[in-house]
Length: 394
Image 1: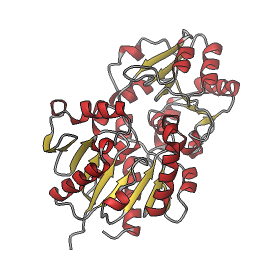
Image 2: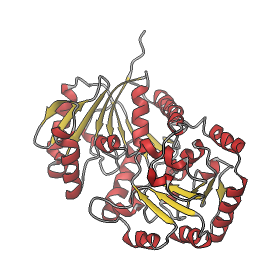
Image 3: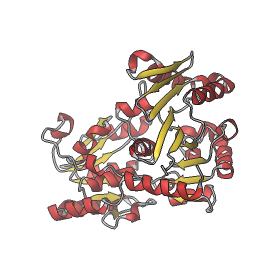
Image 4: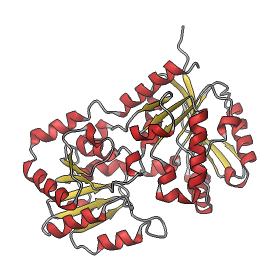
């Protein structure tokens, strides 16, 4: 008897156009890996539903307008467009929810019916949206908790709403996956499963013959960080490194501003005041290994706060996959790899960086790659699917 495939309605934490542009996160990797699985039938991926007017405008321009997307359009209304990417993936981009929740859910149910998808589970990454519990007749409801949005600086204006939503998610979900063990406390142990982040090993072990000038022209040795430059970055540690290593380059590769303004202007101004700190700006996922390969030591200098405590840094897997020595501040998940040097204070961090700069070898680089070989996204998703098969009938 042919095994029944799993159909999924997925509420994303990003837009699909962002991923095509080169932005990468756990949601993207899980979705892409699910699409490769023989156990998965069809996936209807719903772009991040905007809740502010600027986000509505951005999504309408970059995800809705047909001139910016060449994939087959199978449905369109004033606020919603649906595109068929292949025989497995359908992507819905809608701003209807901002204007009328009733309209959005009505349209979504019509789209699901038109797609002849009457047997599916809901899989969500977006804690701002919980109406699917009452609006969609799913076989099961799954939530993947990527960080704790209720303590994220960007969402403080809706903190109470998120806290209430998390309580509802804990009550109504059949399965909750969490990126960090500490997040499990929000949802209860019985139906919560810790599945940390992973790595696309083939992507990060690629070698490049040519380098972008942005990184190739920076003097070595390079103490490097890749990721969004926000307030979670410990400026005291980064500036201490810059002050005490004037002949070394501190490279911060990643976005630090949106279309119109810096996200953390004070932090950026402080960092820009040092001649040996190089802010490179946005780096697409496709080029991330190229930049990390040029780091002599890779760093994760995050503040030890409650938000960081709910994370599992993807960059530690990426650094190790590129064979880089890593120095990090204490955080959940860091202890998964004993090769990562942990330091709490600026002087301890600097001492660890200098030690790693002097001790790196080719054999150590190869050993670091081996450390993450059993942490691929395929292994993570297979674990998730096994948990679903054990706990859900579909």
